[in-house]
Length: 444
Image (cartoon, rainbow, N blue to C red):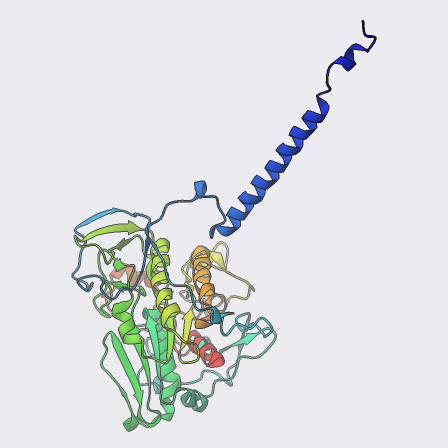
């Protein structure tokens, strides 16, 4: 009988276990590296099992919808949003960093309002023959004129001083076009009022009010134009007068009806925001032949429209030949409790700016701002951003309130309570809108 101890008769399991453990660890590492690589290769940084399935639509196809949307269109039926997304082209690699925003220079959008009744206003309300009754606050009863005397002062530098002669030289032989809603129309009127004084009356002209309205200066062979496009894409609200409709319908995948009018401008100034804040939007896709609409919330619909607009900018704009500006959201001042806790008013009877640095009211939607920033960032140098939101947030005193022409007859109940019909959306002229145009001048 062998004297070998019992435990030595059996082959030990430890080397085998150690080998299996090493194999398991190696396989785990390889699997994890492969998974991480897949995540980084995915544009959304999520695994395939986590992705939501979307149908992507190529926008702005020349052979799109068979008919143009107008105010007489309606939806034959309405269904829930199908999840379609806009697949817009990637900008050229040369687009690079966003134009007009130099990380090493001063941030002209960060600053404060300084009272300056020596340099401002830049023109008198009564001296501008193209002034709108919607914005002529002094003419319509506003007696305090302090709102005209505020200058925007960036914290660590100076905004380029407005020079009407220099601006005309920048515009010589060019078309400057504002494209957007009534706020952008106000900025266009401001620009015309800033520019018109040095053009003799017999050398300037203004076309009648239409979807495209044109101010011409013969001496400079230049025009300053406004195109009514409140929702960027084609919509049933594209009539500049008759656009108060029961349902808002857009063609979310096409700007072609409008781009045919703006594409030959040399300098374009776009805006879009407040019209998306008025409830759900009906979507009528170009490929839809039976008038069946989808319904989507304002932010989602705006993102689709921004995608179709960005597709045009990315594919058509050459920065050295055409300047494109996008003006960020314009704030409203409907709730005084936001800047004066305990109060129950709005912009009515407000005579001074808000002093609290960084003040942000609920009228400016941060998710919308983030979405717009994401789109504009992808466009790089093809678009310059004019960030008027924070500087305008301070100007609760700058709105017409009740001092403007109202197109509808006011009821006795409204007249007894002026705050109930105060316009806390638009801006008096001269005023805040002139500073927005000083920023355009600064970046040209």
